Image: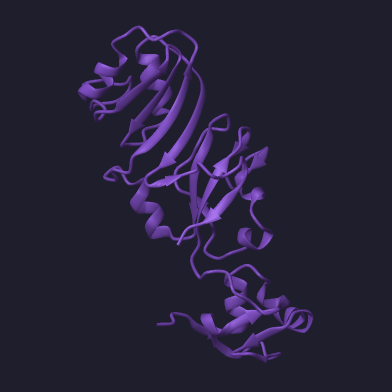
Length: 227
């Protein structure tokens, strides 16, 4: 069943292909067709699935992406520096509603991050009630002291400034300074603060997986569209 039925200029604008004021020029420059028939009227109402541009189907009405975030890239729309949205096609950055990251990764943190223009999905996955698991590879400055795995799994660790202890987290030791840590919540700088609470410091943080989505086959800076 098709969802959108609206003016072609409004629809192309919402998908980021052009602004409404640019739509007339866009229809002249590109072969915009409805059910195979080229159109030039910006006020023509169309269904999303009936429209092609130069024989290519339109981008999805709603987009969710999985990206392998590089180091030094900032999860913000208006910060100073290299913004994560600069890694996307220009038209994605012009969509309305805007694409936004689902949660954030620090500038020096790499790995799996989701981006979406679905506000309800974003809210659901970032809500304190969300129990989406995140798997991190953590590099430490100091060797493990030996009780970290037990403390994290106990559900009793209370971070500075927090009123409730953290939920149980699972840690797997790779080497004495490298671990995999799976958490089911997303407090501010949580992984770094967890190790700081035990007298250690995180020097590199990489998110391997967000929920069911792994970046195993994505190169740094690459992204893929999720169904």
